Length: 194
Image (cartoon, rainbow, N blue to C red; front, side):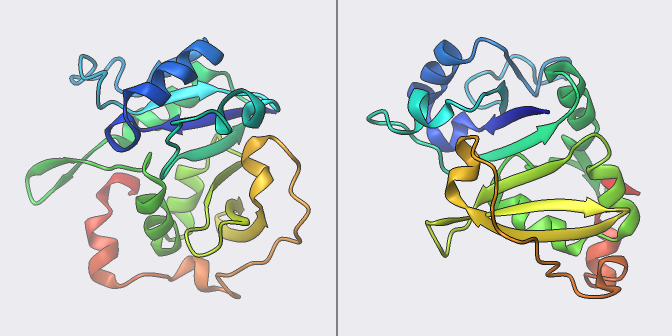
């Protein structure tokens, strides 16, 4: 299983991106191959990380890792980047927007509103997504799915540095809710996963 980090320099700045690029040479812009591939200073980057992430990066001075997303997937870095490409641009009422799934705050609001098919599509090539729990620095929030049913669990924050989660997974969606969550209006707006 490969571990990846999605890093947004628009939130965290170029210094941490430079450190990440030095420590993890296997990386690429998620905008590569899109019309915005020249926007490296604000493009989200996908880094293939390892179990030494905390020692290599997290405890260095001046490191900014706000709203990052850690994920696990069987596929290569290129396969994961290709999986995410269709989600980057979304059209709403004739206007194109960025769907900032690489921002953990957006992802935390988006995933619980998805229906079963949207969850299947978004997690198709992914095992899990992990983000910091903004209300509890000692915990992270891990998202997985079981046949389209969103599973949300709290895990010790060491999970993002490569440690194995020890918390029992708790389904916060409740029975049947994963298939019918979110308002009708919200579902109409989510054309990107139709």
